[in-house]
Length: 42
Image 1 (cartoon, rainbow, N blue to C red):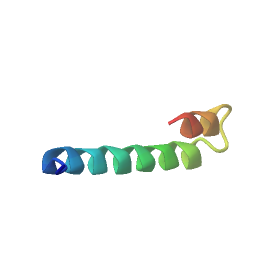
Image 2 (image 1 turned 90 degrees about the vertical axis):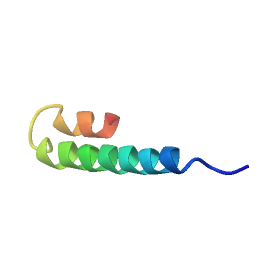
Image 3 (image 1 turned 120 degrees about the horizontal axis):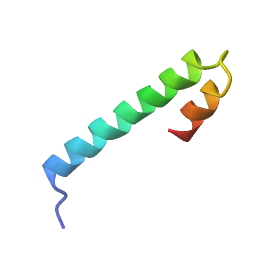
Image 4 (image 1 turned 45 degrees about the vertical axis):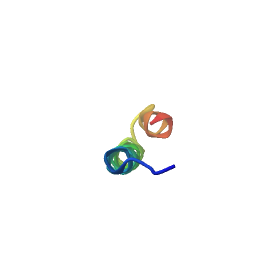
């Protein structure tokens, strides 16, 4: 069964965007109360 090209591209974009957002929240919220927790949740 062939994988959908559109689905493959969308999943890659969403995954990498969420990963970058999580790392950004983790590092920017490191010194704030609860900031690192939000990055871990994402």
